[in-house]
Image 1: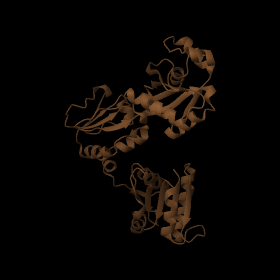
Image 2: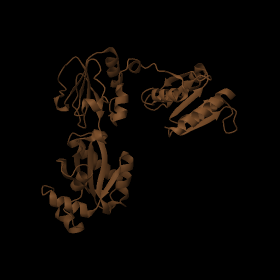
Image 3: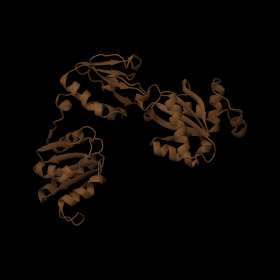
Image 4: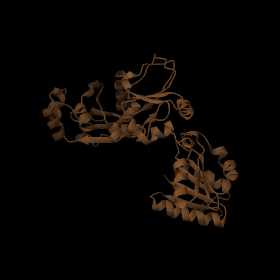
Length: 356
């Protein structure tokens, strides 16, 4: 997280410089902008507007009212807005003002308070009650939130001690970081979820699988647990690769949001379409040598053999073996080799994805 520290007075600037040193000792990049410095814009408001898209967190050392009036026109969405923390010039209080959960303002306020000997001021309901906010759980566990509108409903239930059930194969002690389950919370296996079941409870489903419509829509969190092995003809475009991958996963009832990485053979390291597809999907791209692929084929006689691929590069296939090598060589294939045009796709499930 890159932090911009802004102040309006000499005393605020001195405190900002101290905070900068303390944060940098924690490995946080922090920059101080004292108003009227030569590198600032002509006015404080213009300075903030210029810096707003460049930083993921702001620390304002000044009155809260000034900050509220200044940033109000810039606020868009809690998923995009940066963290905003306000501190008084005497360094007594640190207020988490904006993006407490998703942006990390709560944690930043607590960190600054601990480093500077101040009192953190946190007002989000779940934190005040010592409960985990569901979007923080998702962020910490690498889960993607599919239907963000449902987050508010889940957090309200958690704060009110109302029944909430999590359907997931992730162990409860990992999901809740070894904390005891909050009041009213249950954790059940993912396979037990039924969209037609009326439970009178707020529901959270952590799954890579596409869910049918439900009368009571759950909050859906997507775990990073699918590895796609991809083979393709030379010169295949990124658009064709992504379209093939999306079609195969949709046909198998799998969410593209749960894609953890893409894997292929080492001879594809210069395949521009594959590289661009991985970049576009924002997932790592991993390559495996033909020797490793051959060895896996010797161990796994159940893998699909393509005579064409065997004759061309000397191995029985690419996508299945690459997918397994990037997840677990002994895992069952979730989706075996499937051909779509000039692209072949296989998918493996990483069962213990929560261990990283």
